Image (cartoon, rainbow, N blue to C red; front, side, top):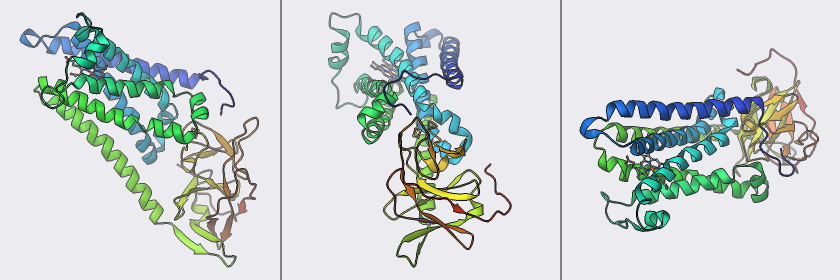
Length: 359
Ligand code: HEM
Ligand code: FES
């Protein structure tokens, strides 16, 4: 919840996370090089530079798969949330490993001629019409450029200055980078390496990324369709969220209005409160978060809001929309009309029965 520019705030848990991620990437590269040296011998022997290129290329692509899969995985299982919290750090690590790969590739393949290496990268192969000899390195360069853009704007400072909507659209480019890099490998390494392992890994990886995104999307739209609309005597449009006591304690149920607005309905402290499902930070799904220290806590980066008025606790100034709630025959109803951000709404009190606790 930065108000102005602040350097990255490394907490102990972030340091541990970064150390584990960097250690895992370094181990991957070292093991890849050791196994590669043992496996590629005799007529298949490759130079140390090419071995390094293969190790860093494979590592960067594997990291990109992890970055892309964390979101949908966290929707299915909240145990992935700690990885999701620091996904941006993983994205920056992906860029750094890819940068090492790109720099060595440009130096090794374009650094020994008379032309400027970058000019050589852009002009040495223009066979855009050929699949077998396609300038695959340009696809790698395009992917790397996007990863750079995302890493360079990953700080909250840019999020504030660009606005959440522009920032989010910019960061959706990660999917374009992924497509380019799949093309880079399919039209590059896979044209010379005739084995089945590389295609199996690339196709398997793409199937996992696409499958997880489709499954998460289908689950979300099935939930949306299941919501029930109730028109009140007061003319207000209400949604039946289900028995109030079935909302897990300190957790939420999410409903979706016909206009596509998602509302997170929380049960906490003997009452029910509702806020928009969109976090003011990067639009994270508040309904997948929890009430911690009395505040609704976003599952993505931990921004907090008070349930009864949608205001961030002092000294922070962010506000989110709240909604009227009521209890009818033990069932929680939420109005579909968003109140202005920061509007106080008293929680609807529920009669205490046995608690249904969150996992
Ligand atoms: C300027 C940018 C880039 C250039 C010039 C470049 C160049 C190359 C070259 C020449 C190879 C073939 C290496 C060999 O002889 O086996 C290669 C392979 C590869 N590259 Fe790149 N690349 C770039 C960016 C990237 C990026 C950003 C990624 C992923 C995030 C990536 C992932 C890979 C992978 C996975 C391979 C195949 C490795 C293997 O054979 O196991 N490249 N790249
Ligand atoms: S989206 Fe970052 S804290 Fe909510």
